Image (cartoon, rainbow, N blue to C red; front, side):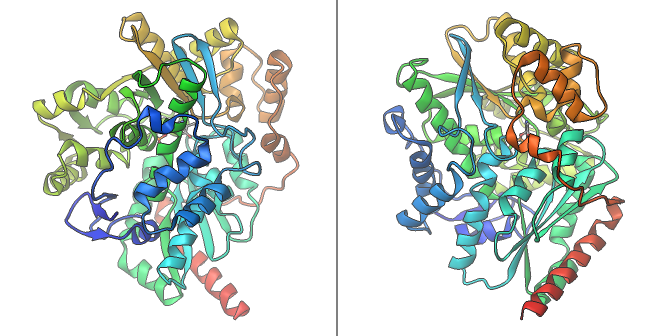
Length: 504
Ligand SMILES: *Cc1c(COP(=O)(O)O)cnc(C)c1O
């Protein structure tokens, strides 16, 4: 299996795509051919998460042997990395709707599922390519990615990681998780601005030849941990397959019965993996893209126009506060039927005018697989409160957006006769202030006090990774102007180079 750019005919090996992240022409790598209809319900039946991982990897990483793929799956998904042996346990709220809990990894967010595997994929690719340069992971985060990437790469030999997080729109708990990060090979910097600023400046650094050359001369290769890397995106297919296998096993659906999936969406990585799972044969009907007030995708799925010329809002679901979803370009590649010139033209239009549109025929076609809707912060808190009071289950704000979108669809009769899966993307305790407001508890400024209050009322225990945070020292206190990001990257390259020289 090779990978091609979304913007040109360039094709590369899986190892190359893993190591380089972004294509040289600025496009994203997509599989050159797609393994269609290989994940039927019969194939998924009674397979463990690790077995499903091996199966999915066997289609996309043909460059690794079966033994290597088995080792990769075992290294990523085990008792050290996940608190639940099932990796993605299900929770059913009633007979028609199931939550897939994607938050049982080390940082309590669904990013752990991909980022537990990704560093191992990357080091395997490095070995295969005979690459002796160190890898420097640069990543922008709206909260959860940064921490999950830091944990995934912490002290992995031959790798280094630098995380930029916007000072605007990251929860206090997420911020604390990052600023206390341990590991010799990590850096964290807050950026004045929002996620889109951080991400677009980082994209520029990635394609800056001077910076690349500077790094190469010092034996360092850039890569990214953002969901633009195929090593981040493709492992996410597995939990759609695993969720379906579990639904069959617990009798929520009959083998082959179609389910809809609601996905709280930011960068469009999670839902795109769902689309890939569907293409591969997992019995998925509609993929419903749930957004907060930054509802650019809702509008797109309604009228086929992607228009970023609008106000950016900081909301209670910060990982979804995004106007330009980086994986959306991959989706456009499929909308265009693989026509890279058309994708390049759309991307050019987006860059110039902040706006692009698909044709009416394309919209009709994509609406067979997708739909979109959104709710605001008030409604999100009402959903958290209502689900807690009715079912005793505490939703995180991102999951609550998706659940609220589901409830509104149900009211409109759109869910009739279909089991729905809602992707639960974070543990509620990562967002104590929002939960306090939703449950009408006093809002303590200290997130740990707030958690104490929530815990006292709900008797939901504090997960160990959060309990541990309290004693940890704050290691990173820097806040940079976005124009200073490049300088910070160069400085980190110097540090790595000096350290490596000392080691010889
Ligand atoms: C990252 C994240 C999202 C958005 O996922 P995308 O793949 O970027 O669309 C939603 N919820 C939570 C909690 C997240 O961390």
